[in-house]
Length: 384
Image (cartoon, rainbow, N blue to C red):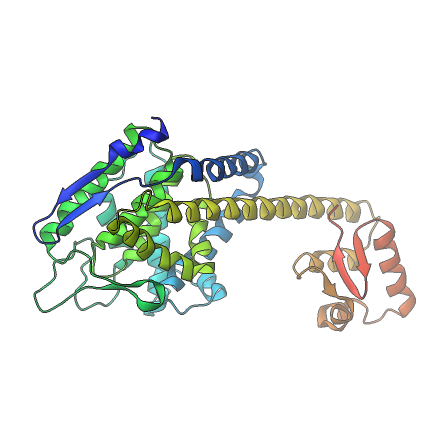
């Protein structure tokens, strides 16, 4: 469909108690055309790299960073290192609530990846309930039930947002309105699919409207980000969809404020009210894909370097001490202070019964072979 005809896909829903609610693309085609192309170009460069060589490591890193990001946005207290460690725990070892939050998000990611791999997958209510159940299972909450849409008692009012990010917003309170709007949300998304609206536009719009409906008592932010990622993953984007959670964390104030900004623009009948959020999303995808590209190049370079020094050791062109130094350098931040390296217990153990001449010869050979670089007291492996 011609982007200029996107407004024909608007859907106005009359609810029982909340009033009218309108789903619209609301995006200025002229403002997103170039960002869309930039994301597609970055993605094409990314997928031409040898992903199979590094897929396991890259996926592990993305999952840990993404789980940390989406969990921290919603108040999770584990550090990124603690998050990564929790993801390695056996199920019976997960006892604390903070650990359960992390493990639940990973379970939701796994289910989303499984769903997105099915040809012809479509977003539906059962999937949304399933993701919510995975995210909130076993977590204490006075009202939330995994997979059950919210129905507010008369004495309980749900509000989202805060003054610092555009004000408070009162989403639908009546369960019948929540269910009606969620049904229309997935049907409207299906219309966008049929009209061939790009996933890079559809995904953030699903995220936006899902959060405005706010259908569950708890976990809505985590669920919304998984839904966005699943739509993108199903369209062929890899790694970046879930890595967007870290981008949102890094740009948290803007992320939160844009939900209210788009809602207020729509209330004021501003033309193309959703352009700011979609543009923000597209910039995030470009940044994330470029980061992944750089990270993958680094991982490939490390693998090649490891193979090279292993061969040099086998050919006796470097000795075991030199090999150990190079292997350690690969695990350290680059560049790394040479003096700190020399003070490390493992380094001192290498030369426990060796003199300064041996140390100097080892380092000179490493530089001559082009394996290390040493400048201004900093050393790092020369990956070429």
